[in-house]
Length: 288
Image 1 (cartoon, rainbow, N blue to C red):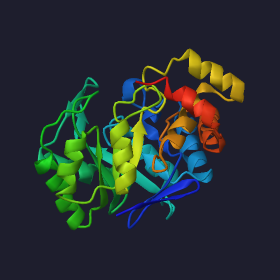
Image 2 (image 1 turned 45 degrees about the vertical axis):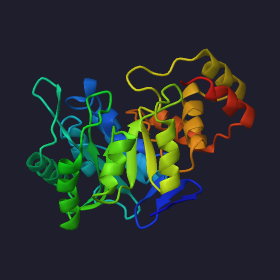
Image 3 (image 1 turned 90 degrees about the horizontal axis):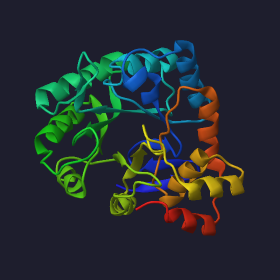
Image 4 (image 1 turned 135 degrees about the vertical axis):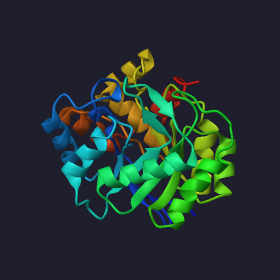
């Protein structure tokens, strides 16, 4: 398996072709990723505008809402364009009070895959990421049993490709001994650089690295250096932070999320922002 960078896309050999700037649909749900959107019409418009602009990578999960986001994606985009890859996740459920309950039992993972199939309105899921660890950080427990359950669903034709989310280097190695891994989705951004070595490993091994919370998530990146550099470039700090990620590795595909058409356009424009080498070196000093 390998990865080929093709301008604005990353192509996994034998796997999906993902736009380097994708779209993360999590923010289409209500507050705390729970309940319906504040503006349903705007949410549908954002999804359609993203695909019309050339986005071929939409990230989702049935536990966003729950169910709400997948149903919005289906309403807005089904039947899906042939070039669109919808990447979903399993490994968690939502409580009635909105809490996040991690759920890795094989039988429940099978149920979660079928829930995604139903709510997205497809017979086969393009990519399924197994979400591990806690809400915020990975742990290093064995993933053999849950990943093997997903590998069986792949063998049955219900899933085309498998990925991982919130994992360690050791867990990636363990998963690769069970089935091919096409994506790794971990928390990574300009200020949160714990996975520098994993980013490089993914590039070397032909795995697309997808940073979640590329702009910091619920606590956006705050940096005087980023603010100053962005002003000098005539861009927003968010655009510069995304452009830094795209520069960081040719096999990174970012998935910034928004429920606003204006913010969507701003995020997509980051793909065209060229960072001089001196600026990259200065921004490298933000993280740790």
